[in-house]
View (tube, rainbow, N blue to C red):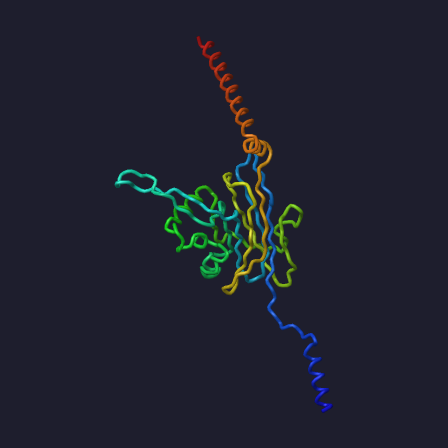
Length: 273
Protein backbone atom coordinates (compact mmCIF):
# COMPACT_ATOMS: atom_id res chain seq x y z
CA UNK A 1 0.00 0.00 0.00
CA UNK A 2 2.83 2.35 0.84
CA UNK A 3 4.42 2.29 -2.65
CA UNK A 4 1.02 2.86 -4.21
CA UNK A 5 0.43 5.84 -1.93
CA UNK A 6 3.86 7.34 -2.77
CA UNK A 7 3.22 6.90 -6.49
CA UNK A 8 -0.13 8.70 -6.21
CA UNK A 9 1.49 11.60 -4.36
CA UNK A 10 4.28 11.84 -6.95
CA UNK A 11 1.73 11.86 -9.77
CA UNK A 12 -0.26 14.63 -8.08
CA UNK A 13 2.86 16.76 -7.66
CA UNK A 14 3.81 16.21 -11.29
CA UNK A 15 0.32 17.25 -12.41
CA UNK A 16 0.56 20.67 -10.75
CA UNK A 17 4.11 21.45 -11.84
CA UNK A 18 4.35 24.08 -14.63
CA UNK A 19 4.90 22.52 -18.03
CA UNK A 20 6.82 24.05 -20.94
CA UNK A 21 4.54 25.89 -23.34
CA UNK A 22 3.89 24.30 -26.70
CA UNK A 23 5.82 25.81 -29.54
CA UNK A 24 3.65 28.26 -31.50
CA UNK A 25 4.42 30.23 -34.64
CA UNK A 26 5.72 33.74 -33.96
CA UNK A 27 3.12 36.47 -34.23
CA UNK A 28 3.65 38.83 -37.17
CA UNK A 29 4.48 42.38 -36.14
CA UNK A 30 4.87 45.62 -38.04
CA UNK A 31 5.37 49.38 -37.96
CA UNK A 32 3.29 52.16 -39.48
CA UNK A 33 4.35 55.79 -39.83
CA UNK A 34 2.22 58.71 -41.08
CA UNK A 35 3.76 62.05 -42.09
CA UNK A 36 2.33 64.51 -41.35
CA UNK A 37 -0.01 63.24 -38.68
CA UNK A 38 -1.86 66.58 -38.53
CA UNK A 39 -3.21 68.62 -41.47
CA UNK A 40 -4.46 72.20 -41.02
CA UNK A 41 -7.14 73.66 -43.28
CA UNK A 42 -6.47 77.38 -43.69
CA UNK A 43 -7.18 79.97 -46.39
CA UNK A 44 -4.37 78.67 -48.59
CA UNK A 45 -5.28 74.98 -48.18
CA UNK A 46 -5.51 73.13 -51.49
CA UNK A 47 -5.29 69.52 -50.38
CA UNK A 48 -2.42 67.58 -48.87
CA UNK A 49 -0.13 64.65 -49.56
CA UNK A 50 0.12 62.12 -46.73
CA UNK A 51 3.25 59.98 -46.79
CA UNK A 52 3.01 56.53 -45.19
CA UNK A 53 5.82 54.13 -44.40
CA UNK A 54 5.34 50.54 -43.28
CA UNK A 55 7.53 47.72 -42.06
CA UNK A 56 6.11 44.22 -42.47
CA UNK A 57 7.58 40.71 -42.20
CA UNK A 58 9.38 39.45 -45.29
CA UNK A 59 7.18 37.39 -47.58
CA UNK A 60 3.98 39.29 -46.75
CA UNK A 61 1.93 41.50 -49.06
CA UNK A 62 0.28 44.51 -47.45
CA UNK A 63 -2.43 47.13 -47.79
CA UNK A 64 -2.80 50.46 -46.02
CA UNK A 65 -6.33 51.84 -45.70
CA UNK A 66 -7.18 55.46 -44.90
CA UNK A 67 -10.77 56.46 -44.25
CA UNK A 68 -13.16 58.52 -42.17
CA UNK A 69 -15.74 57.03 -39.83
CA UNK A 70 -18.40 55.19 -41.91
CA UNK A 71 -21.83 56.82 -41.92
CA UNK A 72 -25.17 56.75 -43.70
CA UNK A 73 -25.24 58.32 -47.16
CA UNK A 74 -28.43 59.33 -48.98
CA UNK A 75 -28.40 60.16 -52.68
CA UNK A 76 -31.19 61.36 -54.93
CA UNK A 77 -32.01 58.99 -57.77
CA UNK A 78 -32.93 60.40 -61.17
CA UNK A 79 -35.21 58.74 -63.70
CA UNK A 80 -37.07 59.60 -66.88
CA UNK A 81 -40.74 60.49 -66.62
CA UNK A 82 -42.83 59.49 -69.62
CA UNK A 83 -39.58 58.72 -71.35
CA UNK A 84 -38.82 62.40 -71.84
CA UNK A 85 -37.84 64.37 -68.74
CA UNK A 86 -35.23 63.52 -66.14
CA UNK A 87 -36.77 63.97 -62.71
CA UNK A 88 -36.27 62.84 -59.14
CA UNK A 89 -37.18 59.18 -58.71
CA UNK A 90 -36.67 58.80 -54.97
CA UNK A 91 -33.57 58.36 -52.84
CA UNK A 92 -31.01 55.61 -52.39
CA UNK A 93 -29.53 55.00 -48.94
CA UNK A 94 -26.10 53.45 -48.43
CA UNK A 95 -25.05 52.30 -44.99
CA UNK A 96 -21.52 52.50 -43.54
CA UNK A 97 -19.97 54.59 -46.30
CA UNK A 98 -16.98 56.77 -45.34
CA UNK A 99 -16.70 60.26 -46.82
CA UNK A 100 -13.05 59.57 -47.63
CA UNK A 101 -11.87 56.07 -48.53
CA UNK A 102 -8.43 55.36 -49.98
CA UNK A 103 -6.36 52.18 -50.21
CA UNK A 104 -2.73 51.57 -51.17
CA UNK A 105 -1.53 48.00 -51.70
CA UNK A 106 1.74 46.27 -52.53
CA UNK A 107 0.02 43.94 -55.02
CA UNK A 108 -3.33 43.67 -56.84
CA UNK A 109 -6.11 43.23 -54.30
CA UNK A 110 -7.18 39.98 -55.91
CA UNK A 111 -3.72 38.55 -55.13
CA UNK A 112 -3.95 39.41 -51.43
CA UNK A 113 -6.66 36.90 -50.68
CA UNK A 114 -10.22 35.85 -51.53
CA UNK A 115 -13.03 38.39 -51.61
CA UNK A 116 -14.48 37.16 -48.32
CA UNK A 117 -11.17 37.81 -46.59
CA UNK A 118 -10.75 41.26 -48.13
CA UNK A 119 -14.33 42.13 -47.16
CA UNK A 120 -13.46 41.62 -43.48
CA UNK A 121 -10.97 44.51 -43.78
CA UNK A 122 -13.06 46.70 -46.12
CA UNK A 123 -10.53 46.51 -48.94
CA UNK A 124 -11.95 47.28 -52.37
CA UNK A 125 -15.18 48.86 -53.52
CA UNK A 126 -16.94 45.48 -53.63
CA UNK A 127 -16.16 45.12 -49.92
CA UNK A 128 -17.38 48.64 -49.22
CA UNK A 129 -20.68 48.11 -51.07
CA UNK A 130 -21.37 44.35 -51.33
CA UNK A 131 -23.57 42.98 -54.10
CA UNK A 132 -26.35 41.96 -51.71
CA UNK A 133 -27.00 45.39 -50.13
CA UNK A 134 -29.72 47.78 -51.38
CA UNK A 135 -28.41 50.13 -54.05
CA UNK A 136 -25.50 47.87 -55.01
CA UNK A 137 -26.46 48.32 -58.67
CA UNK A 138 -25.50 52.00 -58.29
CA UNK A 139 -22.08 51.23 -56.83
CA UNK A 140 -20.33 52.24 -60.03
CA UNK A 141 -22.06 55.64 -60.12
CA UNK A 142 -21.32 56.36 -56.45
CA UNK A 143 -17.68 55.33 -56.75
CA UNK A 144 -17.33 57.37 -59.95
CA UNK A 145 -18.61 60.51 -58.22
CA UNK A 146 -16.32 60.01 -55.25
CA UNK A 147 -13.32 59.31 -57.45
CA UNK A 148 -14.02 62.43 -59.51
CA UNK A 149 -13.87 64.48 -56.30
CA UNK A 150 -10.66 62.74 -55.22
CA UNK A 151 -12.29 61.31 -52.08
CA UNK A 152 -12.16 57.65 -53.15
CA UNK A 153 -9.07 55.92 -54.52
CA UNK A 154 -7.85 52.32 -54.68
CA UNK A 155 -4.28 52.25 -55.97
CA UNK A 156 -3.12 48.68 -56.40
CA UNK A 157 0.64 48.23 -56.36
CA UNK A 158 1.21 51.80 -55.10
CA UNK A 159 3.08 50.60 -52.00
CA UNK A 160 6.66 50.48 -53.24
CA UNK A 161 9.25 48.24 -51.64
CA UNK A 162 12.44 49.91 -50.44
CA UNK A 163 15.73 48.07 -50.75
CA UNK A 164 17.56 50.55 -48.52
CA UNK A 165 17.60 49.20 -44.93
CA UNK A 166 17.35 52.76 -43.56
CA UNK A 167 13.95 53.71 -42.06
CA UNK A 168 11.40 55.17 -44.45
CA UNK A 169 10.81 58.06 -42.03
CA UNK A 170 12.59 59.30 -38.92
CA UNK A 171 10.94 58.03 -35.76
CA UNK A 172 10.41 61.42 -34.16
CA UNK A 173 7.54 63.20 -32.42
CA UNK A 174 6.13 64.33 -35.76
CA UNK A 175 5.32 60.82 -36.97
CA UNK A 176 2.43 58.70 -35.74
CA UNK A 177 3.67 55.20 -35.07
CA UNK A 178 2.65 51.85 -33.66
CA UNK A 179 5.63 49.61 -33.34
CA UNK A 180 6.81 46.35 -31.85
CA UNK A 181 10.18 44.59 -31.78
CA UNK A 182 11.04 42.81 -35.01
CA UNK A 183 12.48 39.31 -34.49
CA UNK A 184 12.32 38.21 -38.14
CA UNK A 185 13.43 39.56 -41.54
CA UNK A 186 11.35 42.52 -42.62
CA UNK A 187 10.65 44.63 -45.68
CA UNK A 188 9.85 48.33 -45.90
CA UNK A 189 7.02 49.79 -47.95
CA UNK A 190 6.22 53.37 -48.82
CA UNK A 191 3.32 55.18 -50.49
CA UNK A 192 1.40 58.45 -50.68
CA UNK A 193 -2.24 59.32 -50.10
CA UNK A 194 -3.63 62.42 -51.80
CA UNK A 195 -6.27 64.33 -49.81
CA UNK A 196 -8.29 66.79 -51.94
CA UNK A 197 -9.30 70.24 -50.73
CA UNK A 198 -12.87 68.93 -50.30
CA UNK A 199 -11.81 66.34 -47.69
CA UNK A 200 -13.66 67.23 -44.47
CA UNK A 201 -12.02 67.88 -41.11
CA UNK A 202 -11.98 65.08 -38.56
CA UNK A 203 -9.99 62.05 -37.46
CA UNK A 204 -9.01 59.61 -40.21
CA UNK A 205 -8.06 56.04 -39.35
CA UNK A 206 -4.98 54.58 -41.04
CA UNK A 207 -4.58 50.79 -40.83
CA UNK A 208 -1.86 48.42 -41.97
CA UNK A 209 -3.04 44.91 -42.92
CA UNK A 210 -0.65 42.16 -44.05
CA UNK A 211 -1.53 39.07 -46.10
CA UNK A 212 0.13 35.69 -46.52
CA UNK A 213 -1.09 32.17 -47.32
CA UNK A 214 -4.73 33.26 -47.64
CA UNK A 215 -4.65 34.83 -44.18
CA UNK A 216 -4.69 38.44 -42.99
CA UNK A 217 -3.34 40.11 -39.87
CA UNK A 218 -3.77 43.67 -38.63
CA UNK A 219 -0.25 44.90 -37.89
CA UNK A 220 -0.60 48.55 -36.85
CA UNK A 221 -2.83 51.61 -36.89
CA UNK A 222 -2.51 55.39 -36.64
CA UNK A 223 -4.76 58.45 -36.70
CA UNK A 224 -4.55 61.38 -39.09
CA UNK A 225 -6.01 64.62 -37.70
CA UNK A 226 -7.49 67.09 -40.22
CA UNK A 227 -8.65 70.34 -38.64
CA UNK A 228 -9.50 73.96 -39.38
CA UNK A 229 -6.88 76.58 -38.53
CA UNK A 230 -6.28 80.33 -38.67
CA UNK A 231 -8.93 82.55 -40.26
CA UNK A 232 -10.94 79.53 -41.44
CA UNK A 233 -11.27 78.32 -37.85
CA UNK A 234 -12.30 81.78 -36.64
CA UNK A 235 -14.94 82.24 -39.36
CA UNK A 236 -16.33 78.76 -38.78
CA UNK A 237 -16.54 79.43 -35.05
CA UNK A 238 -18.41 82.69 -35.68
CA UNK A 239 -20.77 81.11 -38.21
CA UNK A 240 -21.70 78.21 -35.91
CA UNK A 241 -21.60 79.73 -32.43
CA UNK A 242 -22.35 83.39 -33.22
CA UNK A 243 -24.54 83.24 -36.29
CA UNK A 244 -26.19 86.66 -35.77
CA UNK A 245 -22.86 88.44 -35.38
CA UNK A 246 -21.40 86.60 -38.36
CA UNK A 247 -24.40 87.42 -40.55
CA UNK A 248 -24.36 91.09 -39.55
CA UNK A 249 -20.61 91.39 -40.22
CA UNK A 250 -20.96 89.69 -43.61
CA UNK A 251 -23.81 92.03 -44.57
CA UNK A 252 -21.83 95.08 -43.47
CA UNK A 253 -18.79 93.98 -45.48
CA UNK A 254 -20.99 93.40 -48.54
CA UNK A 255 -22.53 96.90 -48.22
CA UNK A 256 -19.10 98.58 -47.85
CA UNK A 257 -17.67 96.68 -50.82
CA UNK A 258 -20.73 97.60 -52.90
CA UNK A 259 -20.41 101.30 -52.03
CA UNK A 260 -16.68 101.34 -52.80
CA UNK A 261 -17.29 99.58 -56.12
CA UNK A 262 -20.00 102.12 -57.05
CA UNK A 263 -17.74 105.08 -56.19
CA UNK A 264 -14.84 103.60 -58.15
CA UNK A 265 -16.83 102.99 -61.32
CA UNK A 266 -18.57 106.37 -61.03
CA UNK A 267 -15.23 108.20 -60.85
CA UNK A 268 -13.94 106.33 -63.88
CA UNK A 269 -17.14 107.15 -65.78
CA UNK A 270 -16.70 110.86 -65.05
CA UNK A 271 -13.08 110.71 -66.23
CA UNK A 272 -14.24 109.23 -69.52
CA UNK A 273 -16.46 112.27 -70.19
